[in-house]
Length: 606
Image 1 (cartoon, rainbow, N blue to C red):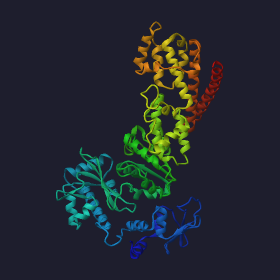
Image 2: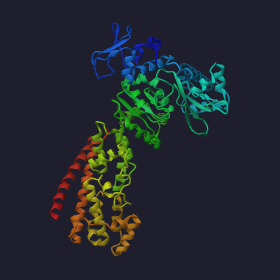
Image 3: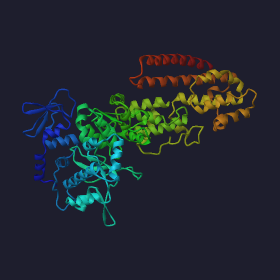
C-alpha cells in the first residue's frame, strides 16, 4: 500500500496551478484563479483554484477537492492510481508494500533515458564517420537542419555497444539499461537495442524522456523500431509531441493526429503546433481520452491514403462516441503525407484542407463502399458486411440510426435488414451474408442475402432477369426499347453488359449466337439468362411483356436515382455551389413526377 509519507510527498511536489493549467485557461482574480470548468460545459467561469490551500472548486457542478481529487476526476482514476499518476509526473519513486517484486526505480530509468537522449543528440550533431553523416543527410533531405534537430533533440544511434559503454561510464547498471529497453542481453553480452538509426526521442506530458523511435538508414527491417513496453513507456497511452502540443490544443480546441514523427515535426515547424502522432500503433482509447482532457472539441485524424492509413481510420471509428470531441478525418491530395504536402504547398492551403475535414465515420464508410461495385447486387451485400463491421462498435451511439439510414440509402438496402446485419456482427455470430447469395452467384442462403436489398432493388433485379431472358428468346420485341434502356440505371451492371452485348449483335444471328455474345461480355450470362419467371408478367404476350418490363425497370431505376440525389444533397460539403444544389433539387423533382407516372401506368397494366 502507499504510505502516508509518500502521499504527502506527492502532494507537496504537485503545484495545483500547474496541474490544472495543463487543461484549463486560468486568470487571476484576487488570491484565486478562475477558469471554465473542465468537467461540465459553461461559458462564464465558475471554476476556481486557491494556490495557497491547494484546493479547487466549481460553483456550477459543485465538484471540488485537492490535487488527488482533481486527477481522479480528470483521468477517471481510483485514489491509489491518482497518487501514482502524480508521483510519475513529479518523478517521485513510491515505496509500496514490502516484499513486492521490484525492478529498477522509475526515476533511474528516466535518468538513463535522458542520458541516452543527450548521447544520441551529440552523435548526430558532432559525430564523425559515415554513420552520423548519413543521418545528417537523411534529415537535411527532409528539410530538418541543425536548428530543428536541436529543438527536437533528434539523434543518431551508432549501435555496436557504444551506448551501453557510455551509460555504464555514467553509473547505470545493466539491469537499469535493459529495463528501459536501451539494450538487450544476448549470449551473455549487452547489445545496444538501436543501431545505425536516426533517433526520435519520445517524452511524456511533462517532457520527461520515456522512449525512442529509430528510423533505419539502410534497407534493414523494420524501417521504424520503437521502444518496447517498459515501466515508463506505454505506446497505447503516450502520444509523440503531446508535451509540446498540449498548450495549443487547449487554446484552439483542436488536435491533429498524424502517423509519423517527421510529419509531426514538419507540422510544428510550419505553425501547426497542435499536432501529435501515435507511436507505432493505431489510435487507442487511451489516446483519445488523453486528447479529450485538453478541452478538445475536434480531433482531426490525418491518415495516409494507403491501405495502412485506411485500416488506421477504420480502427479509430470505434472511439467516435467515446469522446465529446468531434472526430474527423482528412486525406491529403495524391495521398501525400503532411511533410510531403508542406514541402510544396503553403501552410494556409493545409489549413483550408483541415477546415474541410469530414466526420470520421462518414469518411470511413464512404471509403469502404468505394471498394465495391455497388451496381452489382451481390457486391452491395458484401459491402454491407464490410460496413456492418465498422458500425458494430457504435451500436449504442446516439448517431447510430442516422448512420444506418444513410448506409441503407447508399446500398439500396432495407434499413431494418441493415440493423440486423450490424447486430449479427456485434454479437460475434457467423454472419449469414458473409458471401453474397444472389442467383448469379454460388449460393449460401439466398433469403439471407436478398433480405438486405430493399424491395425496389429486388423487384428491379427480377425484372432485369426477365427482360434478358425475353431478349435472348425473342430479341425483336425488345430491340425497339434500346434507347430507353440506354437511359436507365441498372440494378446489376452485369445485366447491363449482357443486354448491350445482345442488342449490338446483328439482327440475323441465332438465339445460340446471342447467348454466346452475352457470355463473351459476362461469363455468368448462361445462368442469368436461364432465369425469369416474374409473377406479375405471367400470362402476357411477348410484346406486352417487353413494354411492361421496361416500365418496371425504369420505375425502380428512377427511384434509385432519387435516393442517390437525396444522399448527395444531405452530405454535400460547403464548397458545392447553390446553382449545383438547385440543379439536383430540380432533377429529383422531375424524376419523382416521372416515377408517379410510371406507377400509374404499371398499375393499369397488371
